[in-house]
Length: 407
Image (cartoon, rainbow, N blue to C red; front, side, top):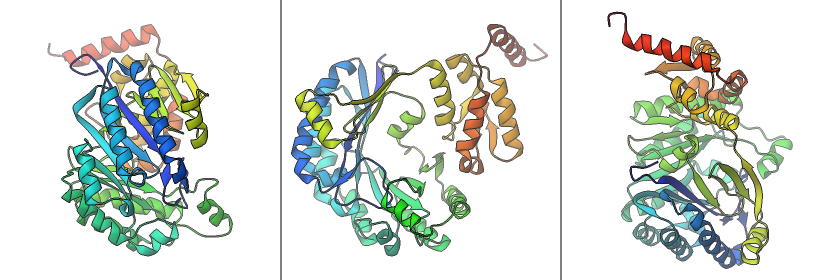
């Protein structure tokens, strides 16, 4: 809730079109469907108009154009979408507006027009600085194009640039990963997202692995990750989430809303939303989505009311991905759950070097982040409702601790 009393809302617009599909990609994106771009634009604009009345009491503070490859969608369509969002929703003047781009499908002219339309943050898919690694996963750009695209971002006057990098790529070594990180730092971005490669079922990369291709193993990925955390910390970067690092003040406001359980609306095929106490998503089908919006068909894929128990589990799962971590009274006050079993487990993690406590908040260490899925699952198993008598006793204990023996 903001100072004006209005709920803050994020809007995500999914652009599912790509020049080509990367071998590791499991996102809902399509290559070779340019013939549906105009119809998809009509559907998105219509859907935004239909959704806007439900968000009348909200102020939009983040907008994210993701994909797919939004820059491949074309500046004319992107400008029209941004204009529609501003026309249909109450958008804050200082809202964070992000557009994802690939180095091969963006130039200074497009970026200048996007900046004038309100885009103030660019997220660019660099992935690697090594030509062989880019070719190995069918990336559509070269390392030289990345350099030129970064230069174009700066020429356009955009002062918030994020680069995506992937460790664990086919043929990657510790030396080549370090080369990629150093190259990225030399480009001077404000934000870095460093993701470990995951082999997703049904992707071309998964089929290559089945045929016997070998990739850097988990131990190798762990070494690359820990080196990255240390290198970026020494360079003055803050790790604020498992995979995300930023110069002070440049954390992604839109992504933080996911991890802090703040409301957002996702628009487009496969897009997810968390709004009005419900979680819902739209069909992962471009043609079905277009037909549903323009022809009045069903486009909802899933829809559920989120229970307090689920929210409590999400709090642990998402907040422990961040450097902010979790805090006892935030947890008790919000969910009326007993923190004592969690604290006992966290103390156990602390002895193993997986968690630490500072300023009353518990967070996972970089070593803990590597094991986060299992650690968080174990914590969720410990969750139990707090009894009224237990809450009152803890409040009395806290009061005595704050008062001190000499008062």
